[in-house]
Image (cartoon, rainbow, N blue to C red; front, side, top):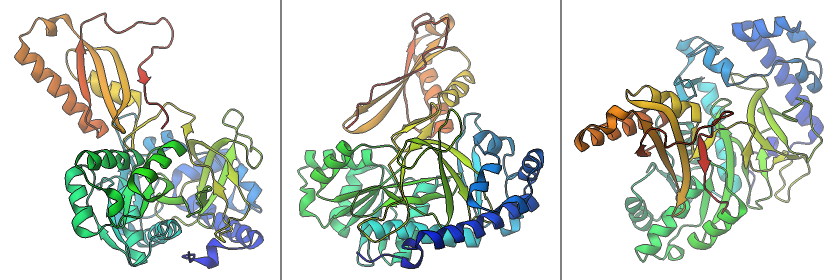
Length: 434
């Protein structure tokens, strides 16, 4: 399989590190001049851009986390004036305010280039017909991969998520050869197809590019077997770009990291000290080429390990193990990031809801399900059933607005949810690894 951009994807490590250092120096100078938050943080540490003389000096820089991005909502972390921002995306946050990210024309070009690399590494060519199963809108997933696939020259079907029967009809009628979405939705498509008597292996479909949620090798094996495709994983996050940060090639032996555009660290989340190559730690990312929204040492909270040995495919960029767990309590449900505190804030905005609730996440037919068991006041239970139904609907609509997911809402009587003198148990995750 040809390498999309061999000049950078197959660089010798000394040349790569020289490029990284040059770009790191430029990025630190850029944010110091243009982002008040970083100038103040660097001054507080007594660090000036001229102090960055080696890649190891990245440790002189402050960490960035979601709190900083929320505290500067909406555009406080932008390094360019809005007249130079041509695209804005966002992801939801625990406070109800989203994390807002911006892109210049140059950023969009970089983003497209990096997702083209990932799609190409997975096997997409100009002859493919690619069906997008990710949500569009403010979410970065669909848009990022869409333009990368187009740059390769493939035909894109921007189907979006849901309406599975229609998705299957498109695959049959349009001759879809590759799909892009979450792995759990791919499995659900397989189940619906089987129930409808559709032989997926008889279709032209041959590739699946998956991201947005953690998945194990068991799920990958099941997808490949039931859909008759090669399934690869890719990784990204809105705070540093979106999809395109790393992705697997056809050898499925780790996700190639775009080291020419991002400086990666893996640290012990308890000590913040770097771990040895191959050891698990928290992934920290510094952008090296972002113009509108550069970030220094962003704490992803994702746990992974890195391998810098060359891959059989010929790429020399380091590979990261796919992320299966995080250092915080974030839930990933159908590719959407959900925080328990986010749900709590939304629930307590509804009159009649008591501050006692349980979030139950499960999996049915390979699709994640979200149920909210919430206590309501005695007065609510004395109302007629019609009012109860309306109340249930109101809660469900509020959750859908804030979280972006449909949830089953179960109203329970006061005192039903277990109490605790310590930390309350608000989440029950019944999903088993596939």
